[in-house]
Each structure stands twice: as C-alpha cells, then as structure tokens.
Image 1 (cartoon, helix red, strand yellow):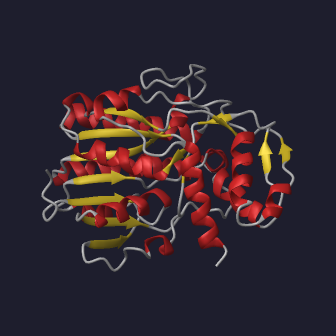
Image 2: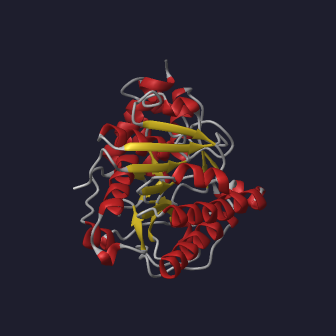
Length: 328
C-alpha cells in the first residue's frame, strides 16, 4: 500500500479536462498533488473543485521551460504527464507549436523526472499512433504510419519514454487514450472534441455537423475509465507492465451516427424538442482514420483493468453533467 502522507503526484496539464479529473480523484483519495498548467488550453475553473485543498499545490508554468519542470517534480514520487497540445487539425494548422509542446516539453519533463529520482512516469499517449494501420482491434504492438503532425509527436513520446527506461532506468508507462470524454471537457473553440461540442449545439437547437456520412467509428472512452487506468499504471508492481504502452479504452466501436442518436435520446429527457434537431453532414476531415477500436486484452492481463463505464453509461453521465453545468 502507498503511504499517502508521503506520496506526491505531479499532474501536468492539471487545468485541462483529463488532468483536473486526475487531480480531483487523487486528492480525494488522500494523496499530495502538485499541478502544472499554463492555461493554453486548460481553464482555471476546472480546478475549482480542489484549488483550495490543503494537499494541492499549483504552479503556473510551461513544460517548454526546463526550470519549471524541475521545480514541480522536486520530491515527487510519480508524474502523470497530461500536458500537450491535442487535436489533429490544430497540429496540421500549426505543426511547429505542437512539436514544441508535445516533443520538447515532453523531453523536459522526462529529464526533470529522471534527475529528481521520480519512481514512475505515466504519460498520455494517443490512439493516433496507430496511423494508417487497418488492423482492428488495435493491438499495442501493431502500428502504422502517422497521419498527422500530432500523431508523430505522440509516437515520438513513446520512443523517448522507451529510451529513458533503457538508458536511465526511469520507469515509464504510456497510456494510448482513445477518444476520451466526460465532465469538464471543453465544448468551445475551433478544436473542441466532438461529444461536448455536439452536446452544446443540441442544447442550443443547432444542427451538429458530422464529418463524412457518420459511419466512421470510435472507441469513445469515459473519463473515469482513464482515471482508473492511470491509477493502475502508477501503482502496478507487475514488472511486465512497466516500460510499455497500453490502450486506454473500452474495447468497443460506436459510429458517429449512433453516438448522436444516443446524445439526442439522453438530452431529450431534459428538453423533448432536442429529439427533432436535424443532423448535417459535411466532408471528411484531413488526418482522420475511418475506424478505431482498441484491444484492451493487454491492460486486462497485466494491469487487471476492467473498465467501469461502457460507452452508453459514460455518455449518460457526461450529458447529465453538461446539462447541469452549461445551462446555469
């Protein structure tokens, strides 16, 4: 068992969607948490639930600054590295900044963690690493060529983590996130994820635009499953699970059309008119893969992972949260 009074967890990107959920969970479970964020994509309001917690320390700063990275990891046992510039379209529009943050910033955090004697470095990897591989379900050891600058940066993260494990003995585990959604995910902005964006549009009786004909599918993964995976990766004592990567998903496949139908069903509980909002279809998006479904057998075998939330259950939780928080 972990000694919670002496265990400090660093969460980078703590004001973001995933980072804030991780910080909230581990603080609630008695751990000390140090959070880092520069608010490039995160929001101060995401930390409202825990900003005054006695075991929480917040550092405003950028992972592109090595000194900042060194500051936050001092005395830390674990790092949960979530800070990144997400979004395939963003990386296509501005590959240089995506690379600076996702590669150079990642390397800074690895170096800082190594030098500070951090026990384990768990990081947000990405399903985009599978690239043009047509193999379904996606198995960790079989990847294709990247389809976007973002995908390249996330694959480079895996390569760097492996080298730091082999060369410096830093324990690393990468979690390849598959289309994570849930409370606090930002519905605003040009690069908003599809579920919160569609929820907000449907609530406003606006027609969501699906890229393509809606037959593309994703392994949408509720945030609590991601928190569960981070906890398992952080504390596992299975040597076979360390210095590798895991799909972080449900192991299911939902088309965009099916997802929208469920959204309308859940939202119409609050406002029956939403059921009649028309859906619009547009062109496919550059860099998008048609289908994504994860094999979670490796995580089940090595981490005893068993996702608590199937897609439909997680979506209902998310819809309820958005309705209660976006309509106020």
